[in-house]
Amino acid sequence: MQKVAIVIPCYKSSLTKHEEIALAQCKKILGQYPVRIAKPESLILPAEILDFADCAAVNFDDNYFADIAGYNRLMLSAEFYKRFTGFEYILIYQLDAFVFKDELENWCSKGYDYIGAPWISRKSRSPLKQVLVNIQRNWSYRFDLKKRGVPNKYQFENRVGNGGFSLRRVSAFADLCDEMVKEIDYYLSQTAHQYNEDAFWSLEVNRHKKRLEIPVWREALEFCYETYPDRAFELTGHQLPFGCHDWDAYPDFWRPIFKELGYDL
Image 1 (tube, helix red, strand yellow):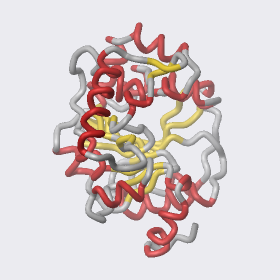
Image 2 (spheres, one colour):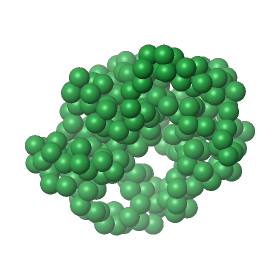
Image 3 (cartoon, rainbow, N blue to C red):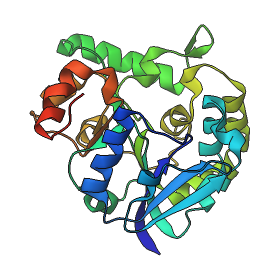
Image 4 (cartoon, helix red, strand yellow):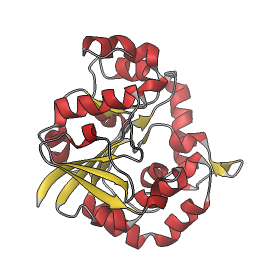
């Protein structure tokens, strides 16, 4: 069994400028690893996405790529993970991700089952305020407290983490897709973004008992930034993480950093 593969979901025949940047950086930093392109069966891939030393397309039903709901079905299906059983881990690298340095083997060696960018808060709080928020967070998570029918914001605060740039242990995910069918069906019946596939892996899987090994949010920040990268940068001592996700949502922060790496946003 090989240690890890990069899995790049692709659902269209041409790439935007920002997607080309994400792909180019993946080739530059992670090009020596096996790469698998998860794609609709009918899609003819753009030639540049196959330009890796070890690259192959992995086809799935077109319906999985028709919309966000379809992608959630795919990423919550044992079918998906069982296509990668030749690898211990997969790194999901959506084309709104960006990798800064090759720390992939190091993160695989830590023994976690799932790592993604934590959903951090916009601002830091006083120690007393943070204690109160932590109580609210833990209470909300334990009892699945909702607001307007969806998990409240406290459930997500500092939760690990976003799935767009995420490391997943293949066997654990495949097994849980078979084990937690009832819970998955409930998530798939919902339309709010609070029930996306990464919310399932971040919130639901460990709600009642520990099923996945997931790092604490402070360590996960060293793996990936997503929300409020300016604050994340402060929290990590101005050291960039392994990668980031949804970087084009924060262009003012990322523009000078990408410029130093040779990319104009």
